[in-house]
Image 1: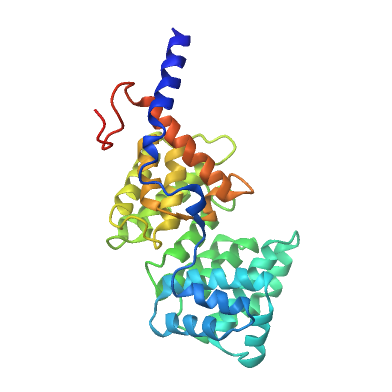
Image 2: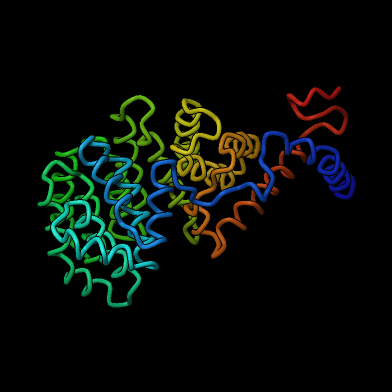
Length: 334
């Protein structure tokens, strides 16, 4: 019987894996961390040593209070500045007090400190940079997201974390980036526990606005739990509820929409960990060509390669559950 089951499973995989590729872009069309249409020209210009477009796009996000876009762009520009400094050095020389420059400068300093074994000491040295970014525009929540990461890296106690958190939500109560930073602080890997992490994520999701990315926060807590060395203590029902909430959120966005790409990658990873193969395949189709480093970089030093490998694995698992006769649902086969 075990041999027969293995034979039938293999036969189903052979029969159905090819058709299940429908709706999935070919491997060579998948993009990793593709910038949106506003950030892309700024990165191209920065690569040529010009800071103007980056300064302009960040100024627009500040003036229009586009805090989520601002947060995303600051992270990407700081990462770019870490490897290509010419444009950033020119910007700093030309406009040393520019609020947008100060924010990227603080982010860059925090990122560099986190990469060092002397993280806590280096982060304490960059405290003035974080404060300068926060003071440059009192409305902006993004410096307070940087401050939350800074608090985590400096081993700040919960009382300090709470003070920074209050400042962040005062400026933007539903800011996704600030909530993610807080969730990291409260995670079992840092200064909290899996229960504390889930409680925080579920409260935030419950209070979230319609179609808010905060509804994926419990799935992020689930990923942190599922990728620990020996996960135990969180009921399966709580993990499935987190995934279901994020599935509902994902369905409010169009297919191949770059805005929820990271959330969909996160959700696909959680569904794979939970072995919910058909649901995972649905998310991989909704993603279109947009793969993101997170969460796959938690599983491999080659996030794109790991994404593509697991995408193939999901198709095989779904194929193995389908009847040997007929085709995948929606394929039109009889």
